[in-house]
Amino acid sequence: MPRHTSIRAVLAAMVLAAGLTIVPFGTSAPADAAVVSAPRGNVGAFRQSFVEDFRTSAAAGGAFAKQYRNSWQPYPDGMSNMYWSGRQISAANGVMDVVLDGKHGAAGTFGTPSGAWDHRGGKFSVRAKAVGGDGNGAAFMLWPTSNVWKDGEIDYPEANFDETPMSHQHSMKAGKEMTATSQTTRVSWRDWHVYSVEWIPGKNVKYLLDGKVISTVVWDVPKTAHRYMFQTGNWGKAGHLYIDWVSTYTYTG
Image 1 (cartoon, helix red, strand yellow):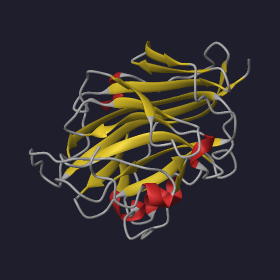
Image 2 (tube, one colour):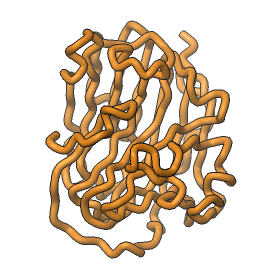
Image 3 (cartoon, helix red, strand yellow):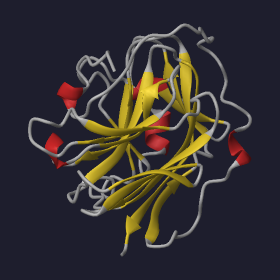
Image 4 (cartoon, helix red, strand yellow):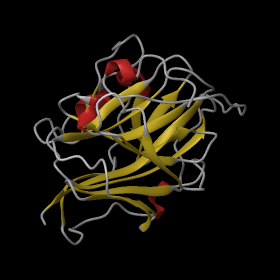
């Protein structure tokens, strides 16, 4: 994707191209978010370790970060003069609302302060949709806690909001990390979908859309500690990224 700016230079890499639709900056959180409840309980060889469904409303500018301090570890405001999670993120109507204004990106890691950084395999699920934000986009990813790119990067979903979400599993060969095995979902960010990654260290990574496997990759499979996070850019049209819930699991096989 053509727009790479400083995101790769700061820890992870990302996105994004141009678009057309303009959505009012003040669009409220969607009322249809609660149609699919957050999962509760274990799934096969995956033991649920964390779930957050954002049921408590909290304003941007400090209240959200305080309320969800055991669920969300944001990048510091002003990081790389690109990310401003504190001012861009709030919770209302049961969703995490990431405001897209074309000037301020947002980024951070899901999980507790102590448990967010040491995933060595597991299942990672998010229910999300976007309204507007054309020219911007998001990357949900498993990024190595070492910040060494060749330790493996798993992106899903990732794409411009005016394009179809995709998966990208990056090469773990030094100097080849930009190369990735990719799969399209053929769905739209404009609709609610559940995106899941099932990662068995050193063996395979499965990508699921609404509970159905769309791709399995058996090469470039990480073994080391990763964190589950997302980023949006500081460009594009006004809009919102809505996150209904997030759930992570530990691999027990």
